[in-house]
Image (tube, rainbow, N blue to C red; front, side):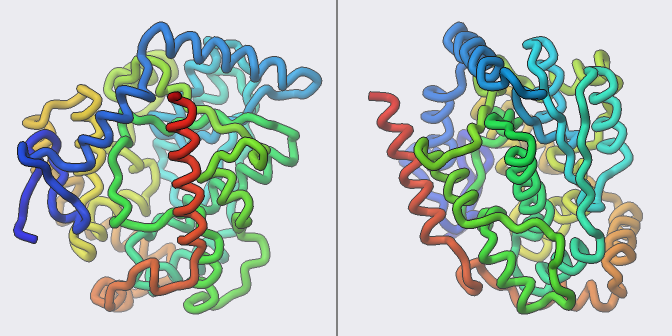
Length: 375
């Protein structure tokens, strides 16, 4: 396919599955706009949804210590949701999973928000030797989604903690404003426990004794949101209020002493290198396209602003070398080993055992349920 870029957002043919209509609009922003119209409710209906949610959480939380759990990364989405939750008067357990890659800013944000808001904070630290082994295994696998070890651990621990505390509700910072677009061809879901185990079995060196692995049922429940099977109810309140990520950052800075860490997901040292260097250089695509395109669809950023932002690199040659050295040191890799991994053949999620068929089936069920609710 010859190079083409959307005339409405900035998604381009770095996604091999992209398609364009006669106006040059891509399938991603067309689908995202349709979803935004149905699911992003910064209006009275959204406020009513939040009121009903708060009432339900309080009712279900009676007799327990907490109404719900909120996974706090230190990033803007989860931090802003925590701040709003204090306004709603909810009893929240803030939960943070430390996979060993936190920036100083994200660590500060997690601790400061818990103190300022008066919420209990539970920090679960992943065993570093096991985390490192899984992370190196993914580097050796040739797969593009190198953030799976962090993402998988976060969700696996969160599900288990909900069970441990008897919490039925999870407030998630996921939102359509900043993440309505993400091509399926760019990776495979991080919740696929079968694939994580398969990759580690092939490339890992040490047994995973404590590393949390998501069960098939938890994976299906999350992707399908099937009422009969779901024991944890996921709520995304940011879709039911006016949400501007730039305004949210300023609010958090002024009200909570929150510190800016950079672009989306850069609260992790590894993720910053992964998204800004490894993906563009090794795999040929840049997730900032999807992030900025989502903001265009939401009316938060213009296309010209997004095109301009794409010209700015997160790295200078010096800071890039510093981050590569830092990651190599933590992972126990030499620079020569790192360079070899960056040149190794690329692989795709279909090359390893997975729950891909069932995850896609659960997604279809989710879509059917979404359509059914509209009727």
